Every structure is written in C-alpha cells, then in structure tokens.
Image 1 (cartoon, rainbow, N blue to C red):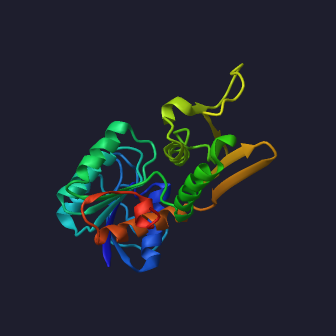
Image 2 (tube, helix red, strand yellow):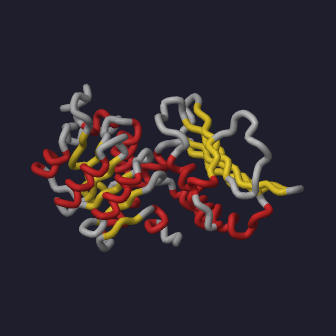
Image 3 (cartoon, rainbow, N blue to C red):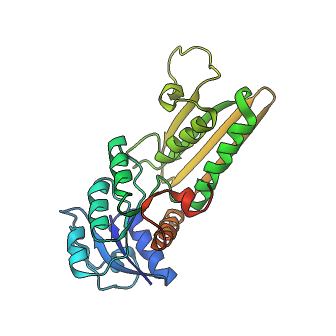
Length: 268
C-alpha cells in the first residue's frame, strides 16, 4: 500500500486522483492540501472527491500533513507552488509527482536540481496514450523528413488558463529534437496578417478553447499529395489521474533523479 498526499485535492484533477486511488486498492490517501482560503478546508477529502469518507481532512499546509501522517508520495496538480511542495516532499524522503503544465524554465531547473537528492516525476501530461504519442511523433518526424510541413493543433475547455498547452509545447519540443531545430526560433504561435508563405523550417502552433473539452492534440505532417495526422483525444480526467498514480508506483523503487512519463512507461 502506497500512502499519498494530494496537492490541489479539491480541484477537478485532485478529486479524480483521490477517487482513482481509492478505487485501485493500492493506495491510501493520507494527506490532502488546498490553497489557504479554500472554502473546502477542513472537509473530508474522500467526501469532496465523491467517494467514502477517508478520515483525512483537507488542510492548507503540506508540512502539516507530514507532521501527522506517513506519506510515500506527493502528487501535485495545483496551478502554482510546485517547487515549494517538491522541496517539502524531498526533505521528508517522499517521492514527488508533478502534473503542472504552466511552469517556467527556472522552476524546471529547480526541480532538476532537487532530483539530485530526491525522486521526482515531472510531466505536462500524465496520460499513457499521450506519452505514446510523443514517441510516435518523434518517429514520424525522423522518417518523413523535410518534405513534410508540421502543424500542431490543440483544444481544451474554456477554463484553461495557459496556451498553448504543456502537451502541445512538448510535442513541438519532440519534433525540434528530432530535426535538430531551436523551438523558440521555429514555432509560430498562430498566424495573423500577411505573414508570407510558409517556410520548411517552422512549426505552426494553434490553441483552441471551448466547452468542456478535456484535451485534444493533433500533429499534422503535410506534403504534396499526402498527409499524416497523429491524434490523441482525452475524454476523461481519469486518464491523467491513473498516469499520475502509475508514476507514484514507479518512484517507489527508483533511484534519486528527475524522471518523466517516458521513463515511467519505458518508452526511451
């Protein structure tokens, strides 16, 4: 049994992580954290998640959780504070799983540094299917070569605060790594006005927002006379929750280091 604490426990993802953890029978939820001022502070995390009461109240401090409960892994899908939570987890010898998408280069560098003394999985998308998509897109970019133009289209619900999505950015990075391109130089975030003819050394990036779409991503490779499209559609947040729990399991036997879902799924 793996004891987990969930950051953002009252959010949409936090609730699904707790529900899936309870359903699996392999995890015990021993901590639940929300932002200071959340109206659900003090309520039972299981009840909030729509499952049975767990006897674990939502609190405003990860330190408070460690002071009162055993935690093997911390899972964080909150919108901010990932580095601070990672520091607390590592200091308490707990694994840290982070599914936050909007993260700065400085934050990523700090998490990499924490990997020297702790066990972390950081991924903008915890879905097993999306991580397979990363591998397929890399292979397509290598095989199809320069004759195929590349465009990325993503769509998410109307409450998503960042664009393009972290997954779309990672897809662009994967393509750039395969082609030895510089992401910041070749990515075109939308197009407007007289931008001129499309060059062979650019990736179009397009973000759509509307309704309750959980997450759709399509990479288009287009050449004269043919087109290859690789698409992943997420219809439930459970796919991300299950991936995060799988990452927590992976870290229980892992050496110190900063990992991603490609490591978890042995796709490298």
